[in-house]
Amino acid sequence: MTQKTYSPKAGEIQRVWHVLDATDRPLGRLASEIAILLRGKHKPTYAPFLDVGDYVVVVNAAHVGITGKNKPDDKIYYSHSRYPGGLHSESLRHLLARFPDRVIERSVRGMLPKNALGRALIKKLHVYAGATHPHHSQTKELSE
Image (cartoon, rainbow, N blue to C red; front, side, top):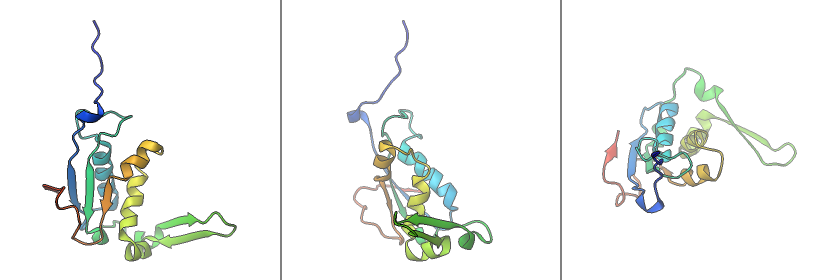
């Protein structure tokens, strides 16, 4: 008789809230850790086709570490309005000054699947520029 592969049911999934401090942590390493927590790859019940991940709250996003001497000026984020001539560009330095939460959200989104599962996973990420967040009742421990 063959062993059946375990697949977690929706009611069996246990979700935990993680609080990560982004102060002086490299952006890419922080984003990959967040993506692992959102996907649930740290759990023994991980399934690549299911949302078994946890919630993640990131604080102090304005103080995230950037490695590289010229990266804040050389790294350019592009967006397009879908109108002719509607290409907009902004450097990492300016985007961190205006919207530090978007820098982390965008780097994490790039590490998630590009389908409906990825869109569901990114909703469990909450990024805040300062040290305070409104999720104190959900979070029990501070992850470092």
